[in-house]
Length: 276
Length: 170
Image (cartoon, rainbow over all chains, first blue to last red; front, side, top):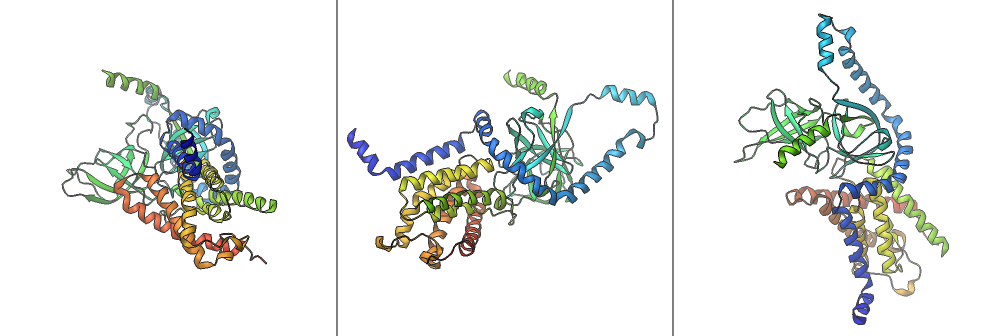
């Protein structure tokens, strides 16, 4: 025993290195939702405040772009306002209202930290548990999809950007009604990739990609991007499609956090099927 | 001596702040994210005991991690870099004991020495970082490209900081 201790003491530099390295890698690899939540709760108290005051300064630089975005979104929303439409039949309007129950609740949050230059990018929002944010809520901006909430503390939340190797979003090319999966290959933050589209359909450049709504997270038909390059690998049955993201991830300022009000019910139901 | 501790503590805070508030928000073509904070590890005095070197690097890495939601990633690569630092110093050539208070900076050791020393260490840091971050073998090409580009970018920024913010000792 003494010899072992003496040996460790003699090589304390190496053993301390080993301990710290294993500790860091364990932190990196072993991240369950629970651990993540515990760590976030502790660190966000400091980092959240720092990013909050930082973004209150840098926010001014993006005001012009944000205004344009809001104006164009307002234009779209005005078209949906009843005054902007011809009323054909009062009865049908009433029927539409009772038939459609609200499925998604939208909340506005401000991006206070964001990155696009890592392999795994995360976004911090200035809203958290007390504002009703929960993990697995969808995050979009007026242009397109942004990410999914992964961890929440009292006042802040971390969003896994779609620019992340763990991000997989179910999407659809609307013109063809074909389902695929949206991923990010990690090189260019402007380009995403769409897989699982079979080669027997004809995909064109410029086809729009929308969310499919099959994931219980994202609502249906949120813009994802526009196809720019279509590749087929020898002997593969699926395309490798590159597309340009609709959202400009570098200039994110305000985003919508979306709660699917029926998510629990849907997940519960799908569990029953899987269990059997 | 107390004065130099204050300097080192201030350097720690300034470099972490520069990293998380400035560098992490810069866009350099999507491939590059230069970890400028490693300058702290590079500039720790030659006499720093091994365990201090490792533990400060660990805390440094964790601080940057807290701001980028990547628990352990920066810590692991910083600890690795701190671990190989003494061997690199030995390899590149350390100053003799009696030369007194020399720091591993550009002014005391010269541009060539500093370029080789920090070039190797930053490269090793980035290599560890790239491998731990991605873990995909099929992304090996991209990882290597990223590592090389970030290493060069970091080296340029680190040398600039050294020239701009440190004075020659009299």
